Image (cartoon, rainbow, N blue to C red; front, side):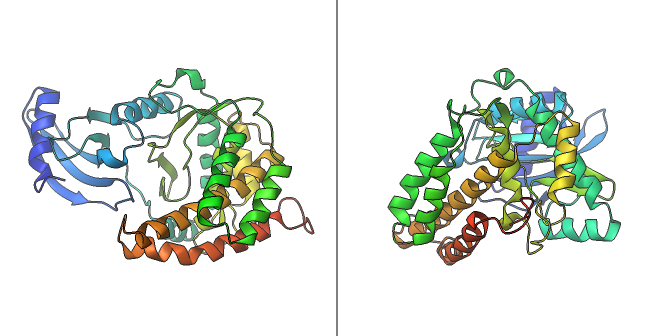
Amino acid sequence: MSADPAAGLAEFLTETFGRPVRVREVVPLSAGARRRNIAFTAEVDGGTARRLVATLVPPAVELMSVEAEAAVRELARAHDVPVPEVVAVCGDPTRVGEPFLISAHVAGETVPRKVLRLLAAVGNAETVAHQWGAAMGRLHAIDPTSAPEAVPAAGPDPAADALADAEKGVRALLADRPVFAMALRWLEHRQPGPPPRTALLHTDLRNGNLVVDADGLQAVLDWEGAQRGGDPMRDLAWPALRMWRFREDAQEFGGFADRASFVRGYESAGGVFDLDRFRWWKVMGTLAWGVGLASQAAAHVDGTVRDIVMAASGRRVSEIEWDLLMLIRPETTSPETTS
């Protein structure tokens, strides 16, 4: 990233708006593994000041072009999914060192533990869960063929593709871990066929990619993993994994909501919930996360990415084994269990 992103942003916005723009109050926001966000105020000559956010995407980790991501976000926003308005897009890495999107700033909490504290203090967790489910329902109601072709497309049988990838990952990184072999057998024996309907997916619509304030859900962030033609239950299962509950394991969705509240919101927006497919994708997502953790640890060990955070990922594989055992254990409780 440029040492002075303000100068690059001001120059780009001046050209975009056709009027001089001054950038001030630049504040780095929390950074993800792949992207960095900076908030700033843009003062347009002859106009009003506006608070904006620039999302910088290093080309080496870009899952899709910033132009495609902007297009899919605006498509979702046009269908009443709460998404920050895209103000401008720049695919030229010379402006600030990386391609970037500029979005309207949406006030609220995004850090998961802060979200949990806010919801506990305000007492509106069920409302947010319903809004969250409804946002996903509206997303899944969009015709996936209307998404830009640059958005990656799922294959005709997403479950079969996911299982094949999981088998490769376990064989390469976790062949000596019996729990992963057992989970693979569970997935193979219960593999669903192609979904009865496909959808435009977010693929990471979890606590951590939500903007929440005292009035409820304000926005859904981080659309770089969007996918055309996927299984809707994949999208529902991912935010229900235990790792996204942030030590509040009793609340299946995000550490603050039960399944029923979320599903009511989803169905209110036209979504159709399939418990068996949901459960299958929940096991698959957990196993895939375990493979991902093992891959991060391996990257540190072999020198590809020397980083203590990557190294520490390996110790969490045993947590995933516990999660998998809880998910695939014989049913001794209600099928609504939140494991």
